Image (cartoon, rainbow, N blue to C red; front, side, top):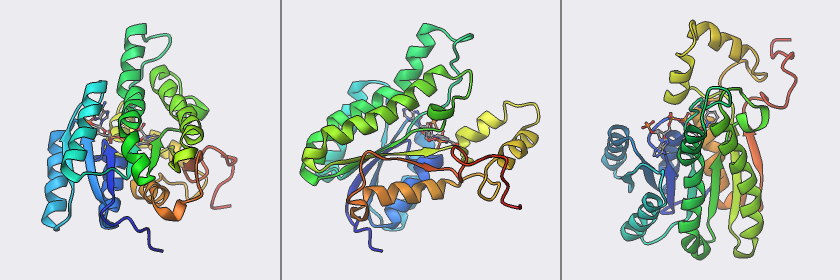
Length: 263
Ligand code: NAP
């Protein structure tokens, strides 16, 4: 299957680590031009130079995405460098444990800035270019929006809002032929996930308990498996898919967790 992504310019937020890194790598393997927008200079520059060493076109913009100005800068710099935008992958975020009982209104708002507002800002500033390219948007959400997790109100609210915005934008942008979809991971071993699991007294024991409950294969989803879905969704092969929430989670959210692959 030819995804026909050659020379398509894709903005990927948080695109140098974890799930975002896998999306950047796969998009680049498919001939697209990834623009990594993220705050981590070390991983951003290292991935950029690796891609350039392979003769690939790519760009890294070091940016903390929490303000509308920084999101505007990402779009302007992308246009200055490549003159077009074909897709936006809103991915950057962190499960930051801002709860109800032990959180605060200020911390809750801070979590929305870190996790939610830049999804809207970037879509807003990319829109004129997406209209020209009949491009598409993929929002990376989280199972937390559907199942809850406890002690993470800011993150869960952001992830739920991203799902609502996916449907809302899919409707609003029908007239331009711009498709908008969400991908919902559950348990993926990334640097973010590793930090979270390490907060438990016995991280490996906790990991065993989690993977035992993942129906398909009793294992974590890989970043590459998330990336395959995202890269497919931004391609023309997904030309009649819009407004969808796609769970790439080994059946974790929807299947009976009492089932086991071994039975
Ligand atoms: P990760 O390993 O921490 O990678 C995320 C990258 O985004 C990091 O480089 C991070 O920078 C950057 N970033 C985060 N917030 C940013 C901001 N406000 N401005 C600029 N850069 C920012 O995380 P991940 O696990 O790959 O998660 C990626 C997405 O998947 C997130 O939206 C997350 O909610 C979602 N997700 C992940 C899982 C999972 O199991 N891993 C499950 C459900 C949903 P730093 O390196 O400086 O932190």
